[in-house]
Image (tube, rainbow, N blue to C red):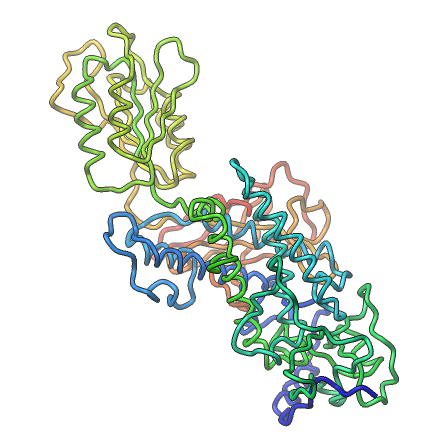
Length: 590
């Protein structure tokens, strides 16, 4: 008989007690293949890391490290090392607050994270029975091949003059899922507890030896608590193995359960191989609940390794995505262009005020706001579409204005189309200045522009040179209209529909009428509200409940037992701010 790779644990009493207690509870049975996809699995606790937690935290730490290497706009030096990577319970909102020191919306960055997370969850939906996609059944070499293919597809999407960032995020999300499963499902923690496996999923790197099909890797640890052997008997303890899971395409070699040892199982109450073939037991570390994860006591250790490896994928010095493609593509991939735009819309009927307009633009450019970019929009007579000029240097935008060819005799107009173009091009939270000698024709026009600007949280100011056909002053500027917006953090809500699919609740963009649907809502700044009370979709209105399990804050949900037939899926949320104001905001689907 071949010698086993590991020796048994010496102290298991506390975990045995926990497992016995958990077996007394009736839980909704939902299988998982490794780390749980999200916080909606019934048996998850607030101590469990999900794939969503691992992915978000890894990305946030990679971006925090990047921000620590460069000065924020308006600052002369980068932040102190550790000031961002050390943020407790880091979120996109906390990271941006600390780095920028003033309100800069994180909405686009969070949207990029959500995109990667959603593609991460696809693996459990699309490949639940394929052991290699989860590093199960000792399919370690095959799992590594999957990683290499996904990495290649992601990098191919980026390695062109006009990168396809959506495709790259798709491939990266799936890559990270498979990568993270490696730590839950293999014995890596027994080989190296202090660091992640940096050679995994990297082209040109060789894997450690993998246990042969004839080698016994686990022994029976008893009916209640199976486990890996702790101490290796092979040289250097460097052979990789993983557990077999029932229902997948790689079947565990059959051995009588009375045999003292054999191949490892994935384990837990959802894996029948754990009780029907030796070695009886299992080695997964996907949760902190012993009934589902025999090595639940290792959950936090392997979760940290998975987070660090997720971060390494983006920020590794040689093979990391940022090292390979540079800062610009890294920023574009994660939509880190968080600064505001400073926009100028020129009504070309104001030609007699050209010098005064230039002086005002110069003053605004030199005001020290340090925008991400400058945008100039104008429409000359005969143009059907406004001209949009974007620059990153303020002097360049002043020069661009000076080159505009404005007719000397132009009818009195108001540039609605120019304002619309500016709203489209501007970053979130931007400032738009409209120079005109004509007032909007009525309140409907004002409301129209307000509606356009609401979603992107824009401030629009109309600077008049005077009323048409009236004497105009080139020395005074009156503000006709200014959106009433305090300089404060704006509330942003995102939602997703989830449907039961095999092992978990999985995102669906098209909920089916009459079926069960779970609606999840997340707020960007949980500390800004007292409560989030209800959602409305068409004529359907339901109460929201704060998600108390899982590690993510600001998540609410409602269960719809019979999804109604609805024209459009616009979701509105209602709640109360800390100031006691009731709000009703439209949520954006992830």
